[in-house]
Amino acid sequence: MTTSTLTRPPRAAGPSLVDDYRRVRAFTEGLAQPLQIEDYVVQSMPDCSPTKWHLAHVSWFFETFILGPNIPGYESLHPQYTYLFNSYYNAVGERHCRPKRGLISRPTVAETYRYRAYVDEHMLELLDNAALTERLAPLLTLGLHHEQQHQELLVTDIKHVLASNPLHPAYRERPMDGPTSAPPIEWHRFQGGVAWIGHTGDGFAFDNESPRHQQYVQPFELASRPVTNAEYLAFMADNAYQRPELWLSAGWATVDDNHWQAPFYWERPDGENDWYVMTLAGLQRVNPAEPVCHLSYYEADAYARWAGARLPTEAEWEVASDGVSLDGNFVENGRFHPTPIDQSERGLSRMFGDLWEWTQSSYSPYPGFRTADGAVGEYNGKFMVNQYVLRGGSCATSRDHIRRTYRNFFPADARWQFMGVRLARDV
Image (cartoon, rainbow, N blue to C red; front, side, top):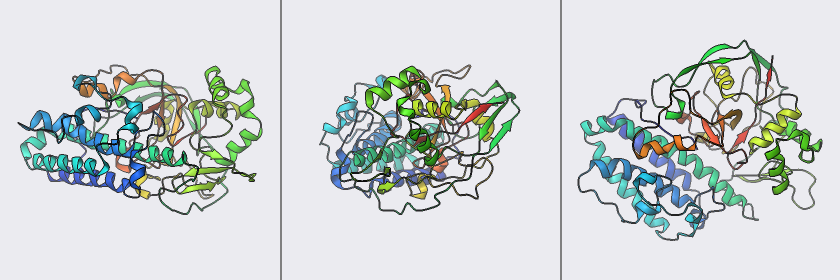
């Protein structure tokens, strides 16, 4: 997941930051509310974490970086929580092995919620101190955005947990109806030239979005919308998963080793000719008009090559998104799945929300990037290798967490996040 920096908060410190704290913390617990107690503790693969761990880790973040250093005599509810709920911050001590988080049955779920309440009690006392709140505002804001990142991971991880169950249980029952036919792709041309890329410095941003810098962009065209399930089904019907010439070498090896034949979460139940997809509303028939989702970088790249196009660079994506509304299908909508594309949609649509869009850009530092001092500097810079950038946010992302300059990143074979593809081509 994307990482962080310390910049000015989006709003003034004081009561509004208290309100933000209460809102974000309550939203996290609201996302967990539909779960059964057994759901909280399952870890279905090493890249996923149990819901219980997410609930505790985001509290550990406030405790470790805000309460401990700033409240004299502060003590954690349990001395071992520092070890259990650290993620990857080497500078603050040892941590429990990530792939074994699902083996930790204690603390219980009830004890985890007591830990959250304990941290909240002390955080709200701290936030009552106006001078201290103002001084810590950048770090407090970072903590809230960190929790929003884990809200997204909570959603996508519980989807993987439920999808691993042959019963196909639903996280929340919700109809998945809508249009079944999307408008054809239109191509939008951009003249290219020298463009400013990166965060402007207004409001919060993660450190990987800076420094703002100039970059030359060649003339290009960008597709009006993401690729749909119908279009990807045509790719599959053309035996694309059996054609090595369409794939990067590492992609072909990954397809072969893992026996991929379709996007992640797609299956054909016994006796069915149609494809179905596991959603957080249970198993649903694949809707041709929905943006195709849960694709790896390898699959996105192979599809683009098959379609006679390519993936955009992240600079092209950012240039094209200038002036596009940030409205979209985000986690607040409660759908937890991309929405079908309606025939009435015109212009550049779906740039934000629904799904993260792969770019062909390797995740690397912008010119002049410097890692922040201290443990917070581990949040981001050390991951700038062997990953690709995604843009735009998804149906599991919070609306007030996304920006045009937001850089998400994942390895090329990752598929469990809400990831899709928008085509680009040279002029």
